[in-house]
Length: 402
Image 1 (tube, rainbow, N blue to C red):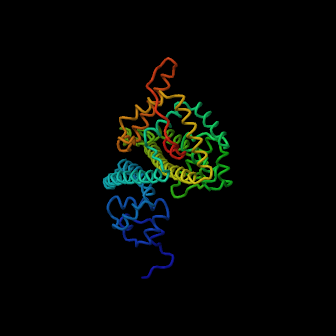
Image 2: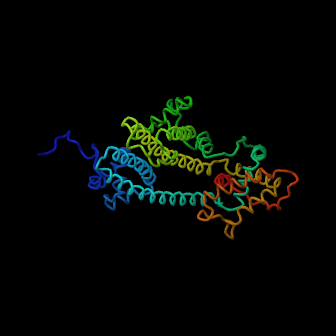
Image 3: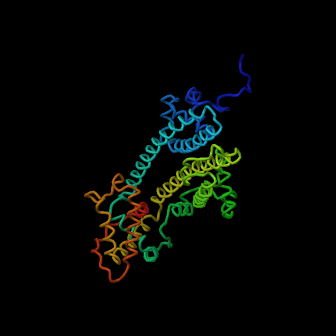
């Protein structure tokens, strides 16, 4: 019998994993962009091997790769909680769900590698556009020196900007400063709507509550939270929510569920499901964290790219270089000490390749250098000699070195 017009169609009902592969190319594309839970279903179907090669390739294109990672991040935690719930209830589907969880974890590991490779390629493209490498030892040494003497560097930069006829502006201390300055300069064009203004005016608890509501409703997103001016507060609220949820969820950390308590299977259902619901909420926070991280990188990248073509770029670059040159001249031994710390990881041309000088190693070295310089900041300490001031450095490259 022919289906009536109000019969449920594939795009209007929840598909089983195997059914996703039956969608034609157009319907599959629409399915991926329809709702987040449907993207999660497609991601799981891909992880367990149900999708056609063309569908798999579409999910792994650069335009969808970050969305796929978000979906798999949610799917991993959701499947773990589902498996825990099924084991508690002795549900025979627990073994199958545990198997899917292992397959999703394998797929997520691969997608993390793919997204990392994509970020490296984008970074290389930005470095090439800037015209100056942001990973040479001298650039990084000058940047770290500014971190070692922030008050003095701020004075030198303000003076250099004034000498160039520019309004004083400190360098961005973090990625959120970069985003907020990008919005103030018109490089990020998101409008300040009444909803955004209301969010900005909320107190800490009320704002955190709004972030929690947004995380609970995975298929609907509050557009106001995605505004550039709210990224710093969103970041803080997500951290706070994860920390507050850990003890209720009996999680091992804000970033890992870990094992359930040993007596979980003997708990009354009300107590057990309180823990399971908290673990599901923590999973939702992780998904929003992944989305937030991606959005922050996009905003910062856009602001940096557009700043490169701003009319005052050359003047600001020259002011930055002048301030850094003066700082190096004032602290030659400290500069040389930073260079000595970087030298073992550098190639012959002074470049620091990421596969050798990894982000984790770089962060550790920076912490150690700054602590070292703070400890020996006494007039009677004699340090090695200085380096010669480097050629002009563009402002964008210096920002990237931070």
